[in-house]
Length: 81
Image (cartoon, rainbow, N blue to C red; front, side, top):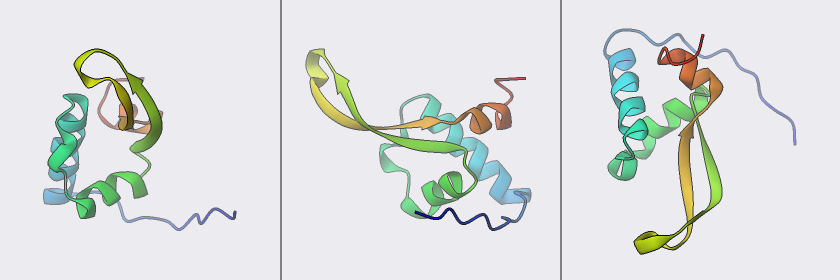
């Protein structure tokens, strides 16, 4: 599979603020209602990644898909130097 490496426009203004809020939602595990169009921005900018399967125990036992920050996403949010 060939990777497409088109240059994305820089995040700015209201879009930048929305991305920061969405990244915080993911960090808190509250991304369940995150609309696809906003999630796609995070994926396109390589700030998050989908991981499957993730095996959980306890009341949430089973296999789930997980959404997590990438290293680039952590840097974007100021979590990694």
